[in-house]
Length: 224
Image (cartoon, rainbow, N blue to C red; front, side):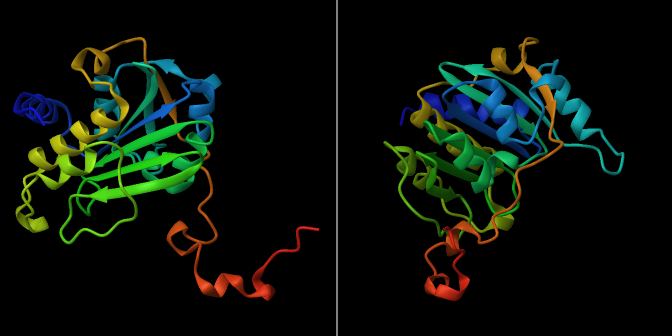
């Protein structure tokens, strides 16, 4: 890991991601399919950059206001930014996004450390968090795990959010091969959408899919 790469993301976090944010990369890049995976209507989009969406969402104090996302393409990936949102970190969404490819999600300020999830072929392959202690399945591609491991382990109450968030964003760059830039975040050609109909939660959480109780024939649905 080059120190200058880490410094780059520290500066980006300080300027853009002091508040909770979810960023999700996925390939293929069909933005209509991506919008539907997030529970948004692609026909209802309007042009807006991430800065304006942040102002809109963080200043919203109307009960029941719909979550906002901003979507566009970035270096061969679709990229969705959710100011104060977390749909992209849900396994249901990651599986839908990665059915024909891959998806990477970074949840900054999610309340249990900063989270990086990786999905491929319709399955969540690995989940990493900067929280202490860390527990999560699988290994990330390349040196992404090593980048997160290089962040000094600190209790949540004294964790440096800039350092932690920079690490997971740099790890995401290593997986996607694409650098997140301020120019992209300020692009007025991005599409702002509202999450009106999110995918339903799994009846059985993904971490329990292999539980022995589910092998009980009485719990199985007759597929015939």
